[in-house]
Image 1 (cartoon, rainbow, N blue to C red):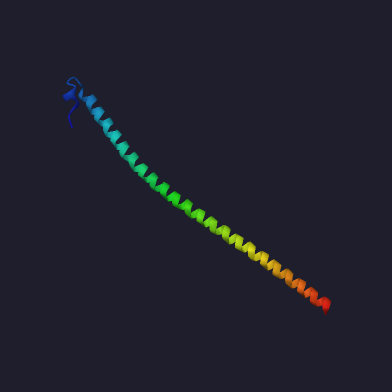
Image 2: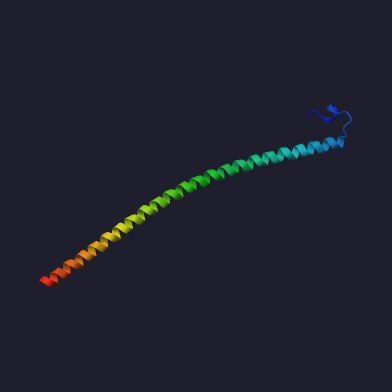
Length: 93
């Protein structure tokens, strides 16, 4: 890497050292930012998968609930039919 004083002969070496330190920090921050972005993308993908699974679970839960309601309705009707039949037998007996 060329030295700044090669391009700017009057530059102070302390200034060059500061510039190199800042450049190094910027590169390090950029590298960390890329790592964080990559992790955020993975987290987002996992969140989307979890959301999709939750929607599937909710859909299945709704189906189960509807089946339970249907069963209860049938049980209620069956129970009512038995009561009606029993009442008719008492009247005719």
